[in-house]
Amino acid sequence: MLQQIFHSRIYLPKNEKTMALLDDLKWRYATKKYDATKKVSREDVEKIIEAARLAPTSSGLQPFKVILISNQELKEKLVPIAMVQQIVADSSYVLVFAAWDKYTDERIDKIYNYMADERGLPRDKFADYVTRLKSTYLNQPAESNFVHTARQAYIAFGVALAQAAELKVDTTPMEGFDNDQLDEFLGLREKGLKSVTIMSIGYRDNEGDWLVGMKKVRRPKEEFVIEL
Amino acid sequence: MLQQIFHSRIYLPKNEKTMALLDDLKWRYATKKYDATKKVSREDVEKIIEAARLAPTSSGLQPFKVILISNQELKEKLVPIAMVQQIVADSSYVLVFAAWDKYTDERIDKIYNYMADERGLPRDKFADYVTRLKSTYLNQPAESNFVHTARQAYIAFGVALAQAAELKVDTTPMEGFDNDQLDEFLGLREKGLKSVTIMSIGYRDNEGDWLVGMKKVRRPKEEFVIEL
Image (cartoon, rainbow over all chains, first blue to last red; front, side):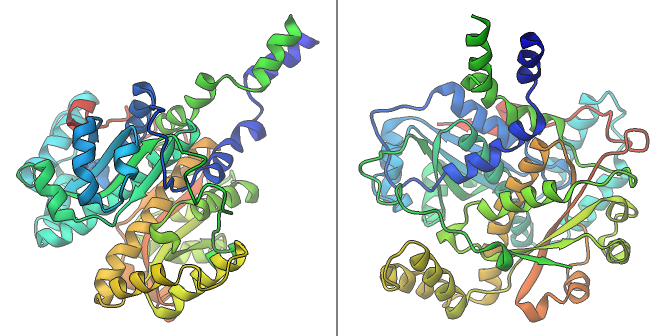
């Protein structure tokens, strides 16, 4: 009997498992001060990046990259660009999400050739679909492409924030930085990338963070959802 | 002894718990055919929306809403707009993520007054910050505001997709629809909202879905991450 209960616990009953992410999301907050003496493990940061890599994107194009910065000197040089004082310097890692500046023939072909190869399909399997994609994106100005590629990066950003919360790793999502300066500093332009958002990763400083004890406030459900 | 093991399993050791989301993300895929006979519970769809509500957004403004559509007739009327044949009609629920068309004085004040009230702080507590926010956003054209509000909706979209996967509920992220037509159909314009993305929610049809058996393909890690 005990054995039976024991087994049913290993394979978690649905309700117990499925509450986990909501609890993690309530636990997380935009950390304002990190404990510089506590370092997030390499294993954990890899999981956060892996979650971003697994995130869905429009037509599977994954039109962005994640720049992982762990070097302390580099992080400190980011402080004036990120305009967030010590957050960046005290965190263990900084991830910069940078989206493709535009879609190109080559970029789209590369993804779809790889997809076909990985699935053991002929490379022309998705030819019609790829033609439609190209006729849509390649006829738009680069700025419109970038509006779209940036949005895809934000999906992955959301998924990565959720993954960090599950690991009980703190994060700060950051936008208020000088994008051009950051692109220049990281050499993104020549890679055809433009920074869109930053995530600092570390462990909260419970004493020094003014936000840590404050109530998490979200718009009430009635104002957030419209049911039709 | 058994009792001890048993307890250590109830309170999951970190490694076991923390692998969960990555496994869920590998399990999920953009469902192409739903089993119209299986309905996702109201409880589960509420959890998915709650995850979106808890997602972080820039300055906590949550500049978007989620439109929940469960009515079958409405879902069927969406089919020609969403341009995805039966996916929308066969799913249990459709969520439309719609972002603020622009920032306004009133919208920003409402959020920050609510935040102060909820935290038991005087309403002028964030006055300087709010002034800075307004001087940034209200001096931009509406289109620039919308680029920003849409991105915030995408963070929540990512978090909601992760939540659905944890619940083993299938989803289809969709963009290729006629935004203006959808806004018109849902009466979003007069609410100051513009649709950005759609999520169908349901259970996969294992027999009818051409994608279900295919390998999940993502760009290899070496191409996805740049380490500095």
